[in-house]
Image: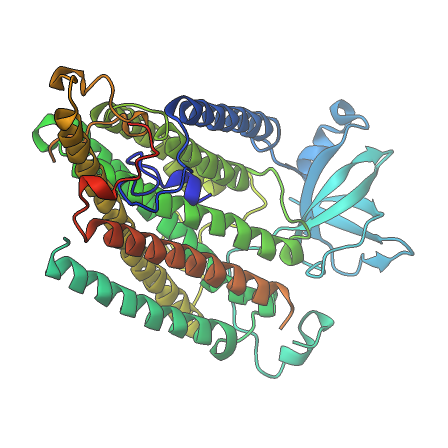
Length: 165
Length: 262
Length: 49
């Protein structure tokens, strides 16, 4: 990539060197390649804008919003956010059952995918899935980490997340 | 060639880069404690935000250089060379931002990638400046190219504040800013904060060195072009039956740009 | 540590190191090509003018 972007001045190599390899493309081909790259870039920008507008404007609905819009949502797939309720977590054979909460509204979750390693009570999560009745069927758990960084107490280091650190 | 002072500053930046990056790595990997929630993963925080910051910085320099070229009173091809040099370094750092973010995201979030606003706008930033670099390869004379790319560079820069504010403006999986957040209260303390700060400084040194090195290459390339053209003109003059008026129309197609006086 | 941390640091150091090496190599090559003043006879005559 670096090679391809180096030619700000249009000379990839010193052409006056006697060792000049015939690597320099004729100008028409160079131009075509440049336009082609530019075309790919424009397409990529389009894809990113499409993905961005489709996903990131409303990246998730909080549990309370989802309950409020329950009727509208039907069994559509969307992202649900909430804090994992302590004491509600039960591992199942394939995934985990738990509840999430936001603004005192609780949603029961049945997850069928392996939870990520930071999944734990009291952590905010974003779940991908859909409602079935009043239960949210999730097939992906993403942990929403906060911007806080706190040094682990040396005595607790060995047991943070139940893992040896 | 390059001035002695330039060389000296560049060397100093190089040495400072090596030393400070070494300090960042040692502090980041071994000295700092694990995080209460993240455990060892917190160590990636000493490289990911600093690398992203350098990308912002690099594109900022590209923008300033672009403005200085567009403004007639300061117009000089050297600004164009500086703009492209900084943009290229910026693309490297944006790439590394995406890679380190992804490596952190997999264990921390559970996914390598997600289409939230921060990630999407950062990917867009990467592609926009790739486009800037691609645009520069479209044949044109140096002034035309400089103007064109200065405008493109400035348009692409609009995305930088959007990337930074994305975590405030939209709901994202990505966390908000740890240091430069809206309330301006850092959420990191002690040796972790110190290491993060050293990280920011060290990668800024790396940027300065890379920029100077890349700019020198752009400058040398320009000189090579000048030498070539001179030679070409000389040869054409010596050839019997070729008028000097033809030189311009038959010039080496590879070097379609006239190295204008800088 | 946990694999991810190492991979992240390696990516950064490898990426920056690789790009630096590329820059150093390129400027060396360019400097070399500029040092001796080439005369007409040094030119690769097979290249079309």
